[in-house]
Length: 236
Image: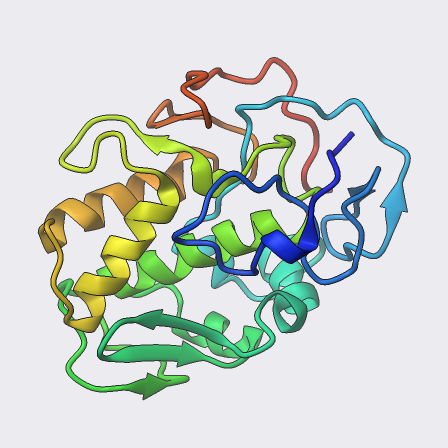
């Protein structure tokens, strides 16, 4: 059973803040609810999904998939407008804004060299590089984890999990995203583009579909990264 959240203290995108418990940030539940993966308004009575370390992430290809059944693209299409009421924006001095789920589907996945932005972009389809795509994917996962209490099996926040290894060892997922936004948008960061890109890739690939755990992240509070005994059926 998901714990209640204090909506006043949690924002839809919580890159710099930690300590809030996950749940719906838009009045769609969060008290005593396990929510349908496509429609968070649909409450179920399943209370056995309790694994504090089993989060859920999606790769660029997952979030960029065309909506079909209960796939990530369908989830995004059903929930983007509420989770991102002002659109999804990444960057710093220069930014990319994706205004709807179709724009995300058109944009992801991104390939090519990872570079910083040199202008502001809205709803572009390609040419911004792999770093930008990885950051968009990670931003969606973290925001959906805060927005939907049933996005993953864990009652904890994905944004509070910490990186294991690499140049960003010990940073929370929120902190990694903050550094990635600085680098992508042309602001000053203490980390290199390649270091941040590696961390983002690890985040996106660590808990794909909520059915795996690569061990690249620690649970909030240093609880380790345990493989789930029974990850459950996220998709039908």
